[in-house]
Length: 195
Image (cartoon, rainbow, N blue to C red):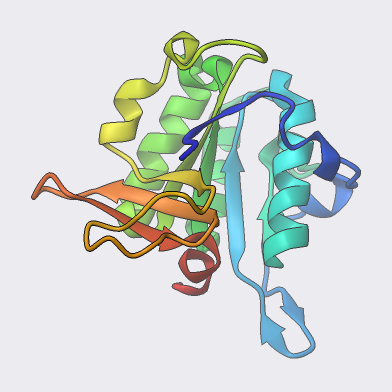
């Protein structure tokens, strides 16, 4: 199981245009079916990893991603209006994902967005995508305490098993810890469908 990904690991998906992800989230449909919308909270310095995550989510899962850092309707200078706009975008999206790099964990804006996303989306519709620096050990990751609070995206390679001994199919899942202390996993595709 991999729950902390390495920065750069999604670079194969980074050939996307960010322009489509900067418009306010409205009703997005494809062939008549509404797409799940996802607000991605991120540190502006993490552009390469953001592009990889955006491409990964849109290409593999068919969701519509919104990123505030490229939204032309945001004020040129950060202000109270910026926070009001972000609140509306978070509320308007079905899901909230924090691209949880070390820089994002230390960012006051990312932490504010995570707190607001928590209040709006609750544990059912919020997840972390954790990324550590390239070639670093998991202990170099600064957001480990978040893993016991928030669900997070993880990858199972097909060698793991459920508690009953049956195999967990390889793929991406959202893993969450409940108050009973047990961990539960949901396939990422199912998580996106649960709006």
